[in-house]
Image (cartoon, rainbow, N blue to C red):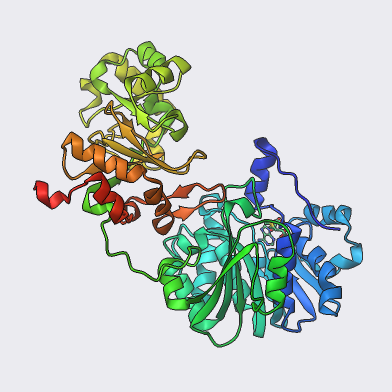
Length: 502
Ligand SMILES: C[S@@+](CC[C@H](N)C(=O)[O-])C[C@H]1O[C@@H](n2cnc3c(N)ncnc32)[C@H](O)[C@@H]1O
């Protein structure tokens, strides 16, 4: 028996899963993780967030392979999911060691020999202020410093679990790639690898994603409470299901050849520098980078797209004079091709999609046309002036100003990430990054765009971005400026160094 989850695609049920982080680990992954923690002769496993018992099933499944029974212990905050586990084939007796308790405040009598978890993946903005204060204190106690306020719940699960690990105990966590790529990541992994031995990191190709319908790129870390070592195993699983991952782990990472897994022996220093979720990059890129040719800024954050980003009909109904409107583009999926033309904008207008940004400068409200004053009153009724971001503006309706970027970078779209040529001076909102070439010559801009569109350049995005399960990549503006541009392509297209233009 094992756990199989059919995910609701959207709606309240999906939202509830997100709130509670209730996504179950598939059996082929759970067995490999339990194999690691029990391979050090542990006689029991502890799952801090049991859910419907994926790891308990895995433990029962591999008992015959490891030749001993495993005691099952854990925490779960939601009694109803635990109850559900009885319908997946677990018995009441299997749950006897589970407490209904918040793991982050759990203090066992003895340290734990084997911890295996798929912690609730709850992003920081879903956590209450009180929880955040508690978690910060917890991280200060354990790490000696507090983590950035944007750190997700799962990270606190990880450090609390590490802190509860017995000497030579083992821990296997499946966590989102942001645990390695967020602002806090460098400090966190430095701390972990100075205090524990990071045996292995297992990543997954999108085709082998353990959570195929969730926008999360999962990574497994296998950690021992033992003196640190300066090398680790790093694997990328290319095919889902199957037994190879478990076999590799049970062989103490010694299986010479795995068909479905690419395995690397990496130096810890390189892996931390590159990012543990990324493949090895011993070579330091010495060639051209995007920043040599362009500056990158994020798109405009309106603070309330539903108010400031208008359809043509809304703008006409409100009678906004044209001088207060700028053509704008909001979502990556509004751009179906790699180029924004007048036709793109017309098509969006016909579809009733917003294409106009209400762009008012800092002038006083009373000097604005009466139609606009009326519209702003509506915004005040909606309490927009007190919304995050908007309340930092003076006056609250003053819109950010940008030059229209000739090239946009679309990220986080389900369709491939791409560079888009902006032929109509559309203002991008936050679904895009703005690429401003250092030189305004049309030919130069076209050549840069061609280099950026090249598949070899697109491949390099993995070196600078944060990856998501569906193959999407999120890249911060500063990181995009570091995007390596393949030298042969730069030369073939004839893109000249900007120094020559200045
Ligand atoms: C991602 S699921 C994983 C469940 C299971 N271990 C698996 O791998 O399929 C995380 C579980 O953590 C539970 N949970 C959320 N917050 C918790 C907390 N503070 N303490 C313990 N469990 C929690 C959720 O109800 C959910 O069942």
